[in-house]
Image 1: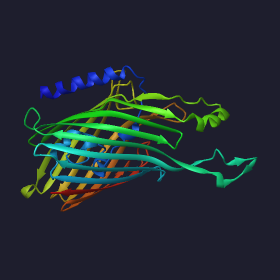
Image 2: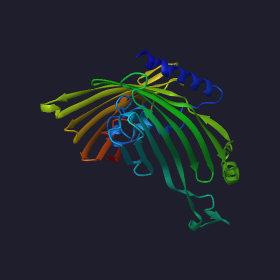
Image 3: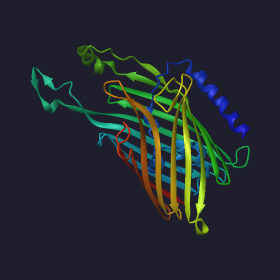
Image 4: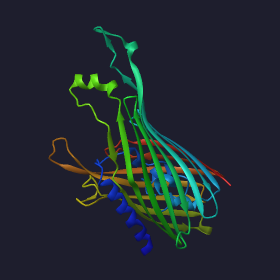
Amino acid sequence: MQRFGFLLLPLLFVANTVLAQISTPKYANEFLNIGVGARALGMSGTQAAFVNDVSAGVWNPAGLAQLAYKTEFTLMHNEHFAGIANHNYAAGATRLDSNSVFAVSYIRFSVDDIPDTRFLVQNGQIDYSRIRRFSSADNAAFLSYARSNFLVKGLSFGGSLKILFRNAGNFANAWGFGLDAGLQYKHKNWQLGAVLKDIGTFTAWNFNTSQIADAFQTTGNTIPQNSIEATAPRLVLGAGRYFAFGEAGKFGLLAGADFDLTFDGERNTLIKSSFASIDPKAGIEANYGQIVFLRLGAGQIQKIKSLDGESTSTTIQPNFGIGFRIRQFSIDYALTDVGNQAEALYSNVFSLKVELK
């Protein structure tokens, strides 16, 4: 287990060295932190230790090494803000040999059909036919590789190369790259996981100033300049255990917790300091015969100020999910923020997974 920690320290050092050369905003490429897959979101994203399918390319690439079948495919659709924003995800993974797996994942978070009213008024007259429309989209592709029994039996290692493309119509676009690296260790029914995300991740923005100069000058805003935006690294640590009950272990319960650590100053999390902020989350998954699944999770514990600023309250986001597995097909559903207990709006998430021998 000492090797487990030593492997992470050099990665963290490299990430901090690279980011020291670039201005790093606290929140960058946040669409990648929403998470993917109804199974995971039903458990509030508690995945670092026991994600073991095609979605591991996004959550913890080391989990790909636990792939149960030769090939897996998955699709997800999710809508935010009453359908204004669309969150789509697709991925495929295939086993290269008994110890290694390769996967490709794609995420698109977008707001489409945004009205462009710059040409609405012509010669003092309103002409609605002159309204144009554009999309603002964040795209990410993951190329992932994982290997089991890495250095010691039961230890898996994995990495993901992230390619980012973001655009706001033809007004601005950006290309970016980054790395994730993770470990998973399994011993009997215990599972441990760690993933370092956004190792040296950066995004280079290019603004088409000829398209936006007039509008910005009219409104008195500063015209943005081409720039490089870096994403600060984060470390996610997780632990979980599987419990079997009943005759032949027909009933099962998987329980675990993740701790999301950021190092860019205080955030609105349960544990925070100038050095690091820690956002804990917990999730459970009960199953019967690995056919029917019930999931619960809780996370995003925050303190919210009242409108008058004189008092604060603590909120927590509870999530719920169900799943069904029929032979090699899995259908999962998640409802995030059950009862609207957190500041975020609830969201319905649907996923489909296909496993091929």
